[in-house]
Image (tube, rainbow, N blue to C red):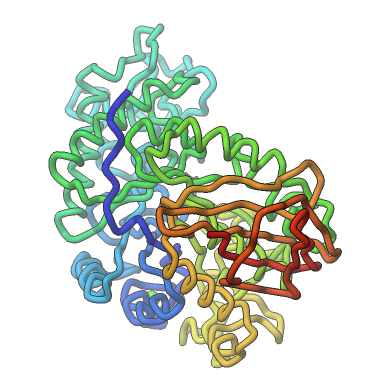
Length: 519
Ligand code: GLC
Ligand code: CA
């Protein structure tokens, strides 16, 4: 297999902040967040301690899937601003030593994309093979949804996600129908070249890389991912040649595959085999103070992936994202602080979803906005302060992109900045400690010390050449213990009442998290 992918240096200690542009800060009172709003808050993001931003799609779109249905890959949607605003966002970020990655959606476009309109035509043209079409309207592609009956072209077009997101053609792993092409055929190759042009366009403007949407499902009928891995290796060669500093993170959820494809980072996600949901979002999450969770399968899968990926890249554990329920839906109060003690002491680059740093709630009972459905409750506008619309927008309340948490005690950044015991300050402190200790950063090693079936706490050792740090996390309300006969040294971080050791075991109090030096 390929050489180890070279990592951009800045990923070593990067802490990402995910921004959903429409919900962050509205500066022209149309009820929708914009790029200018993000620029105005760069200092806030930096003050929290984040060093990089992942921006969800902000390109021209009919917004049937909140922008994941792209109509023009190279044009900022007017509701967010202009391409010049984007260039300014890159510049202003770089001036603060921060990096910005954009969202690349290579799998599908909107039906309104020019490519698709051309592809629907009966006459053969440059875009005929840009999407996955069958050769007869009555034949649908196996195992995939499709669009049919809206084109003069005789065929059905495969879709990826919603039925208005036609699948771009990267070929089939093993084509076995006349209309199926292989990755090496001219159509799929042209699609990939077009996507490289999109990447070039933004990277030349100053973008620092991409989060890649549905990265693992581009080549079809590719159960083991071999075809898609090969596709990304091709992209890796292009980036190595032209943009070696561009950072790439995949929405794939199987690091053993994505890192082979040359991605620097992969996410553990709400889908896929990672057991990520066991942490914060299942019936009995491990991080609930009820203490009925089970971390063992998560750790087991993590270790397997960590070994299989041979440290080729980073496994990233997000606090949440725009597709899953807010962290604060199942966890509250100190539980959130302890969850962040874990998130910010694990290897890989941490990703904090906007608003999670103040414990923003999942807004229950909302009507779907732009294809959000149950995801809409996690996408409500940022709560900055106690002014109108929590400082998000001067538009009338009914005109906001999504209705905000109506509770009188909804968390705001302003209130949390004023309260020394807030979640915000705990996260700020945790990031500072991470920044001061390479062992805790992206590439530091991890060895699990205690992670048993249905048991607490969770304990692991993070290490670099300079030092070893034992991390002990007990989200449960009860005092627990585990066998440990090593020496413990200076305490670098403590939340809760902490731990003690008698040389044979460590006893940790309820709802505590401790980082302690062991050499
Ligand atoms: C990804 C995105 C999600 C989107 C889907 C289709 O999962 O995160 O928001 O709806 O892909 O593009
Ligand atoms: Ca606006």
